[in-house]
Structures are given as structure tokens and as C-alpha cells.
Image 1 (cartoon, rainbow over the protein chains, first blue to last red):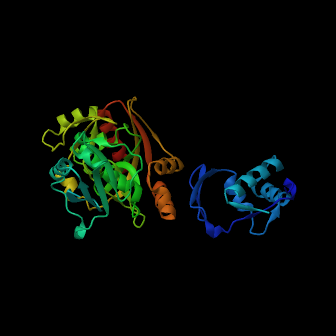
Image 2 (image 1 turned 90 degrees about the horizontal axis):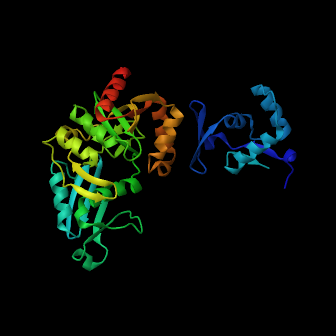
Image 3 (image 1 turned 135 degrees about the vertical axis):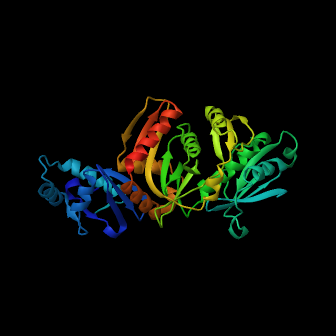
Length: 94
Length: 287
């Protein structure tokens, strides 16, 4: 098992997702699984900061802090959310 | 099968076959003014059959089958044969319809625009649609509204209206000249009586309508209405659609376009007069 801080995450190709922001919620259709996800912040933001090149948690946290004015960056919470996204196929963990 | 009939409801053609004469005779009487399937070819087959050969005669019990079947479904007594036929048609739609996104909803039309009403069983979708039909709206259906992914239009499915319990008496008084099926007491959903939609609903069944308003009615509460956010409309409509998953991306696209383009309101109503007044007011506010 890779330690949390050593894990790297990449986004799935955007061509495999349909993302429709509605109100407080965003809809994501995942073409690979045929599943529809109804998500709230921070999931759309996380998908936005991921690249097709895998990045480690420190780099992603820095990007998140910079782009979304985070007051209280929490590495453990970020890892937990990224792992959830990876488990449902919306991110790639390596 | 021994007895059979063909009919078309909106864009969908059915062939209903039966081991018994009575359900087919009732269908033929109630669907007398409906067209036949285009080119005589049915989209879906419904079969009403005896579980064992002798059960045609001895305590006759109607099994519902067709192109698609639910295994282990319980049979209905022959006195509920018409209900079995209607359930069989609904079942084929729910399991096999792929051309349209099915919304478990009633729909009525005015000025080319559709009002779609959806909610749990007993919320009043059928009753409301029937009351609005009696007030001059065009009835498009009380069970399924068909959303066309190609055009975003709602197609009607104006099968027989299935009235339940208290609404049977309400509609009998409101539309005494309408053609009714037999009263079917003691069904799994209580007392049911079918009524044929009016002539206009049948004549215009092929005309789709632009969706304009979605309502989520709830019977038995003081009059109230509140707007519903697009994400909540989306979730409620996916729950109200039996083929959303099977429709895949076409269903996603059709539904996201719908929820972003038209308003929705949740309405509570204590009685049918209040409901009709509320609907007319909300419809008037759209203009």
C-alpha cells in the first residue's frame, strides 16, 4: 500500500465525462461505467485541478489552495476525497 | 394465443394475447376508438396465460407475460383480467422501451405546451390529469410521459385512465357520460376503475408537446407550493424513470436539457378544487 503522501492522482480523459453544473449540485455522467453521479463541492473543483499527468498530494493541495482560496488546507481530507473519486472511476490513482 | 387484439397508444403498438375471451373483449370495448399499430406491427407483445392448463377453468388465474417477463410475479384472478392486460402493457413499456425516456408521470397539454406531473402512487397524478382534461386541457397520459431525446418534446401515452379509490367517485360525478370499465374492487392498489380518455385526447395522441412546467403534487396537505431546484428535479425524475439507466447518455442529455429549460414546483393540496386552482395559477404565471 502506498503511503498517502506518496500517492499520485491523475484525471480521467475529459472525453469520458459529461459534466453539467446545475445549482449547488453538479451532474457527472461517466461514459465508461454508464453511471450518473450527483456531486457537490469539492468534487467539481478536484476534477478541475487534476491533470492527465499524475501529481502528488502536495502539488494538488498547492494548486487547490491557489485556485480556490482555501483557508484551511487539509491533506488527509484531500487524500480521502481523491481516493473516493478514484474508487468510482472519476480519477486515476497510481 | 386463443384470443388477441392489437392497438396503438401514442407511438407504441401492442399486441395483447389471452387464454381467455373476457379481457380481450374488455380491451376491444374500451380501446374501440384507438388506432391499430402502424403497418399492423406491434412494438410489444403482452400475453395473459394460465399458469397451468387447468387453471383456464379452475379458479382461473392470469399470469402476465410478453416479450419481457418478471419471474415469480403472482397471477391475478380472472375478474381482474383487464387490470392484468393494462399491467402487462405497462410492464413491457417499463422494461423494454428504448426510444423515449420514460417518465412515470401524467401529462396534459394546452396551447402546444405540456404540463408534466409526477409523484408517488396516490399523489394524485391520474386524478389531476383527469380533472384538467374535464376542464379543457388535452389529456396526454396518466402513467408515462415519453421524453424524446432527439427533440426534447413530450409524446403522449394516453392509455385508459386508471382511477383508484376515492377518485373513482369523483370522476364518475364529473364525467357521467364517459366510457368506464368495470369496477375492479380489491386489487393490490385498492378499488380501480378505468375510464376512456376523451375523444380529443385520442384524436391528438400523435401530437407531441413542448414541456413547459413540471409539478410534484402531494395530496392531503394544506395548499402550498415551492420551487424545486434543477438538481432536485433531476434526481426525482431519474427515480421516476424506469429506463433512465438503459437509455445511458441519451437519457442523461435529455434529462439535463429538460431540467435546465423548464421550471418545476412541488405542490401540496387538500382537495381537488384547490389543486386545479393551484395548477391554473402556476400555469398562468408562466406566460
